[in-house]
Amino acid sequence: MNQIFDFFLDAYKNASATDIVLEIIVFVFGITSVIYAKRENILVYPTGLVATIITVYLLYKAEYFGDMMMNFYYSVMSLYGWWNWARKKENEYVLPLSRTNTQEKLIGIALFFITMFVTYLVYSVYDYKLEIPNYIDIFTSGIFFTAMWYMATKKLANWTLWIIADLITIPLYAYRGLGILSLQYLIFTILAIQGYKQWKKSIDNKKQIA
Image 1 (tube, one colour):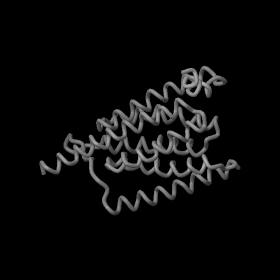
Image 2: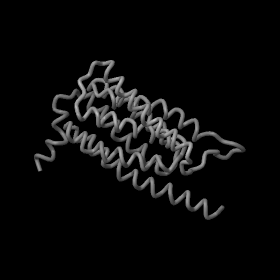
Image 3: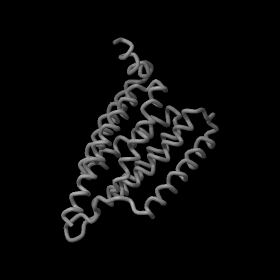
Image 4: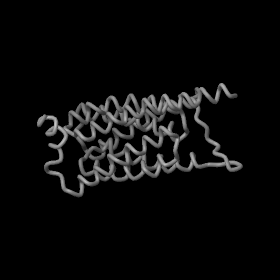
């Protein structure tokens, strides 16, 4: 039992009280944001912004530049998603849940590769020595970036990408000794599976009505 507690707490033995409080805020708001996303509630974006902005600061300090870029992009894309989800016409929201068409899939593939390239450049600019976890970080950054864009446009595919990237990230953070973050992404995975089922059910129900 002590080993389990040590796994989750070791990384925070030398952390400042401020950083610990900030990570707790990120943990709570990050999970809250995914819950709102699952419910198709626009509060996904303000809660998500709190988590991503703080995370950018924490990851910069830890020199995880790929993850830092990912969360910076989350912050920017959250502003776009917030605006896109809030758009109304004749007092009704104009952005429905939907599946990706061929053009949107191609855009997603392009975003995936562009993001990986940009993330690699960020590491290069900082003259960071790349190891296997960093290459995994670059790969998951591409998936997460694309997932965020699909979420901003209310595409069901966003959940599939979240699930894939979350499952990769769980052992990555565990390997880095970041037990709390590993646990957070485990929770994200469970919520993403629930979100996929809920959005799919909503899309299928609308098709039946149509």
